[in-house]
Figure (cartoon, rainbow, N blue to C red):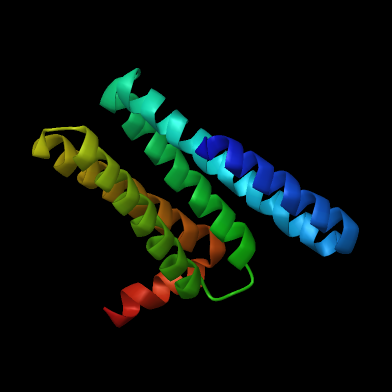
Length: 147
């Protein structure tokens, strides 16, 4: 019954949008896409954890961090390298925290979660160093000179 009310309400909103504003259509479409992406994401996470076990989930999480780092580097290339590394680390930590929370809920072993954190931190550190080297070799020299 709730599902039917929801469908009717969506149709009602859609009709009003069509009659009044093209901007509202875009907003509604974006909202629907976001909901679909979230639902699909939840399904994918469950499939990865339940069917493929923890090892595949760890590999997938590493790939996610790598993609985030690459995207960040592309966006921030003209900014100072230190800013890039800070952005990369913050985004990486958020990703790692999300994965660890899901792991802690799904997996009963604390050891697995700890190993996951160590694994991700190593990947993040190496990638961040690569970002520094690729962006600005001089900044590496400055960091070592100051220390």
